[in-house]
Length: 421
Image (cartoon, rainbow, N blue to C red; front, top):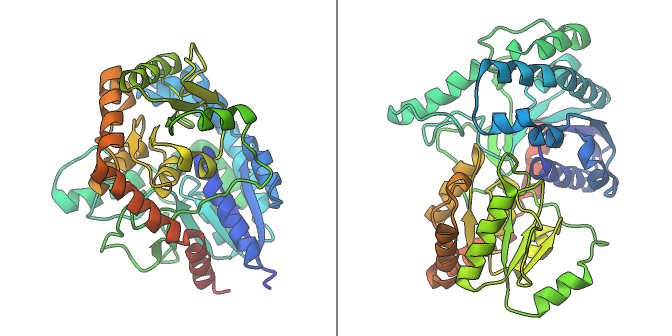
C-alpha cells in the first residue's frame, strides 16, 4: 500500500466531474490517499462513494440558467455582458481557488483540470509534482486539428498549431481575482503575459486526457508526457434501482430512443421537447427523455415516451435502440461504449468537435446542431440510425472495443510514472 495523498482539483459540469470521481476511486483502490476538490453541487455524488473531499460553490448551474449565462452561451459578446460576467465570477473564483489551495496542502502530487490552470502555481509553491487533465484535447498544440472552439484561420497544420499559441496569450493571468489570489494567498509573483502554463522549470507538465484513442487517435506531434488513456467511466452505485414504472415501460414494447441533452442550457427546452416528440411520432418509435439541467421538459408527453430526471447511462443506454444527445464528452463516451448508433445535436464548443467524429467513425449520421433542429431532420437522422445495418454494426464494434479498454487503470499507471511513486 502507498500512503501518499494525491489531490484532484475538478471543475465543470457533471460530465466533467464524473471522470474525476472515477479516477479518485481508482487511485484509492491502488492504495493512494485522495482528496477531491469539487463544486458543492456534486457533494452527494462524491460522498456516497466515500471519497475525502472539499467543496467550493461556483454555482455553474444557476449561472447558466440566468439571463446573463444564457446570453454568454448564445454567443452575445457586448461590453455590458462581459462586465457583468466578470463581476459575477470574481468572488466565486477566489473562493474556489482558496479551496484548491487548502485541498493541496498535505498532497504528494496535484492533478488539476485544464480549466484550472492557476492550480499549477499551487504545485510549484508546494514543490510537488503536477499533472493537467482534460476530457478533450484542448491543451496540447498539434498540426492535426485546431484548438476546440477556435475560429479556423486556415494555413493548414501551421495554422492549427497557431490557434493554441494565440489562445495561450489570453490565459488566466489577466483575471484580477486570480492575480490578487496569487499575490495574497500563494505569495507568487504575477507571471508574464507570455508565460506558457504547460511548462514548469522549462519542462512540459504531463497532460492526461480522459478519452479513448479508438475515438480520436493521438497526434504524432504530441510529446511523450501526453497521454489519452481511454475513458474514465464512473459506474452507478449498487443501490441504484430503476423505478417500477420505468421497468414496465421498457418491458412493454421495443427498445426506445434515448433523448437527453445533459447540462446544456441556453436553449428552449419546450421547443426541443416538441421537436423530439414530433420526430419520434413521425418514425413510429418510443422514447425515453431524461431532463438533465433542462434540455427537455415533461410537457404533453404521449404514452409512448417516458420521462425522468436521471438514470445512470451505464444501465440505461444498453437498453436503448439509439441515443440522441448534445455531444458532451461524458455522454458521448457512454453512448459509444454501449454500442448504440449516436445522433448528436451539438450546441457549444467541444460538442461540435466530438459530434464531427461520429460520422467519421460510422457510428451515426451527420450532426444536427440544436439551433437548426427540426422534426423532419431529426426524424430522418433517427431513421438512418436504426435502419442502417452497417452503421449499427460499426457502433456495436466500437462499443466492444471500448468495453475492453481500462482507461482509468492506464491513467493510474501514467500518474505513478510521472509522479515517481
